[in-house]
Amino acid sequence: MNPRILVVDDNADEAALLSQLLNQQNYESVTTTSPAQALDLLHQPIWDAVLSDLSMAEMSGTTLCEEIARIQPHLPIIVVTGHHCVEAAVSALRAGAFDFLTKPIDEKLLFVSVERAVRYWRLYVELSQLRETITQQASLETLIGDSPSMKRVTELIMRLSPSTASVLICGETGTGKELIARAIHHASSRSQGPFVAINCAAVPASLMESELFGYAKGAFTDAKNSKEGLFQRANGGTLFLDEIGDLPLEMQPKLLRALQERQVRPVGGNNEIPFDARIIAATNHDLETEVAERRFREDLYFRINVVRIDLPSLRERKSDIIALATHFVKKFGERYGRNNLRLSVSLSERLLAYNWPGNVRELENCIERLTTLARFDDLCEDDLPEKIRSYQTTSLFIPTDNPAELVTIDELEKNYIKKVLDLLNGHKTKAAKVLGLDRRTLYRKLELYEKEETLKNKRRDAPTKPLFANDVPL
Image (cartoon, rainbow, N blue to C red):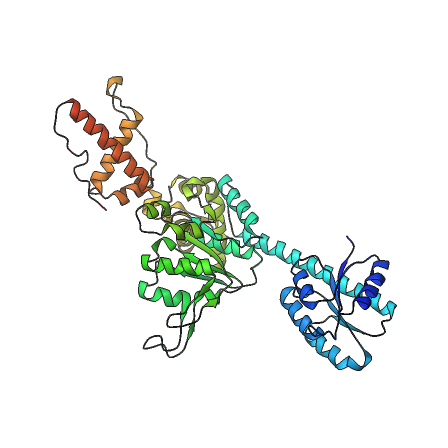
């Protein structure tokens, strides 16, 4: 594609002459007599260089250079000035101009300057793209695993990289939600900006507003100086709201307003402060159930859930366990000066057999323990925690020879749910977690069982009684 040059000169005849000269050298040129219009055109990333007059009535060439540097950093600008305005040309160079030419313009010098500017810009773009590719690859290298579920996550991160859309990461505790958030940040165009994280479950409700939005001097007794909030600190980068499902209900409308308006008001302040940060949120809660039970605002849920990433638990990606364990052996081996450590076959079998309720974090802690206690280069299963070493997979044994004693899968599920509720004293939230169900699904099943039992009792002309005597409300 021929290089495209934007010519800016409030003298239409001189602009046309420059354009004609450029076109003769196979450059595509567009002219404008208005610096303001030039700035509008420069919002389109299609230009290779700008050729601008320095003395214009509407805006000086120096001011134009400063504005272009703000819109298109590093885009080369060649300013044109008279012999008597060399000092002004030097000022333009300090403001970001690439080169300057004096009138009357020497055609050879013009073509040499434009060629240098175009070559510089295209090399800059190529290097930027290369750096972005390397950054994306480096950020994804931290995501260990070749299972289909992790491949889908990696692909989604790559597709998200050119976007600034809000992302919601859902997954059990220990699945690596912050690691995914950092990978999204480093693979994006904001990778050079800050990555600012806050755990919404760890900050007291009374301090959450000032942490997120900052506070003005004198806002409260100890506020001797103003403080910048996390939204401002994340400008140009990413703000990671971890465990957003635990955000206090009274803070949710304030957060929603900030996300909608893209500006915050510090505690005790009078002015709104704009911010430019990508929002990534994470939770181990079922937010749809939280919304249904009015513990999380529906409008905030939709605001943060533009793109959703569901992280698989470690038991759902067992094919990645050995790769992850090997990675952690290398990591902790280097930390503790044991670079020759390796997994034994028997240890690998025990790692694969275990269910890993604590997910990747539990596996990481387990491998750190093994490398700390290691007596030989081959890591031994004897140093595993007792619950992992003695773990047995659940097997089903039906002690009957009479098919009439067997029950349907639905009846078996109902009896198992009843057993779990009895053991947990009717606590539905805990039962849902043990059963691997979201609470809404559990409630729906319980309602169905109650209706079935009520119908049976009516048929028997017996008074209705609750199916689960120990059931207690949340």
